[in-house]
Every structure is written in C-alpha cells, then in structure tokens.
Image 1 (cartoon, protein in one colour):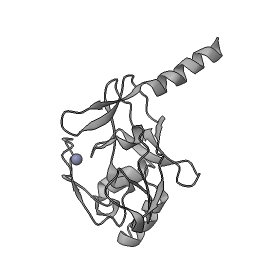
Image 2: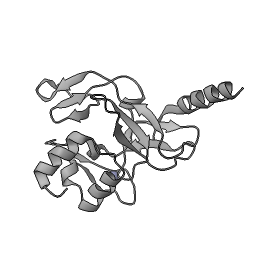
Image 3: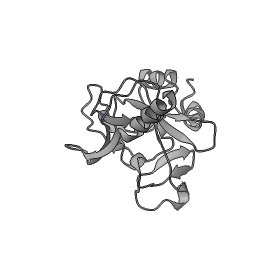
Length: 175
Ligand SMILES: [Zn+2]
C-alpha cells in the first residue's frame, strides 16, 4: 500500500502540468495541483546548438557560454518568462542537464515561469518584457545587466548556472 501511494503521488506531480493559452503571452505551462517549494518539475531537453549554427529563433535556452539547447516539442519549450518567477534553473552535475525547480510554493492553476535572464550571457539582443509582475524590469537581458539586488537574490536561491556565474564574474567582477 505505501508503494502504491508513492506511485500515485509521483504520477500526480507529473500529470499536474498542462499547456494552455495565456491571455497575452501565447501558450504557457500551468499546474492543476499545488506544488511545494524545492521540487524539480521540468527538465530541459533538445538538440545542442553552437552560437555560430543558430538559425531562426527556435525556443533556445542557453546552456553554456556559446551553446544553446533547442526545441524539444515538450513542456520546456513553452515556459514563459517572469521577472517574479516561481521556478529557477538548477543543474544536476551531468553536463547540460538543466531542470526547473520551484523556488516558492505554487498554487493550483498558477502558470509556471522562470526568469530568462538567469541563463543569459553575451546575448546581444534584449527582449521587451511585459510580464505584469510588480517588479517587472521591462526588459529581458543578460544576467550581468540585472540590478545587483536581483542578481544576489537569484545567487542565494542557487538558480544561476555555473557558466553564467563564471562569465558574469568576468564581466562585472562583483561576486
Ligand atoms: Zn517582466
């Protein structure tokens, strides 16, 4: 019986995610169940692409200084940015294995978001942000260009990939 219960709980966690149209930002990923803080919920997968080989914009996430991970067709392609996110990127120790982990409790039917800037270095193009968070920066740009208190908040939450920390250290030399 305890084993059966565990299986149902694990399945329940995975089954709780779903894609749906947002009011103003295209498709997003939501959860039908509340999720506590500190839970890994979505793994990034996709083809690795070097900066020089990137073609048109195709839902890339940066996973190294010059390497991006392309589209998977799965949930990880559709997670919207927020300047006040409820998940952040964590690494497992396996090369290019990135997960989104909840950084606060998430309510049922809340959208899953992360701050795109937490994985951006040497990115020449800024994106406008209209995430409607109280603390919206109005722009999505490199981690090194974020306000210092925002950088520190994310560093303390341990949701900044090592390559971002190392590259940003060279750029701004503050941590
Ligand atoms: Zn914003």
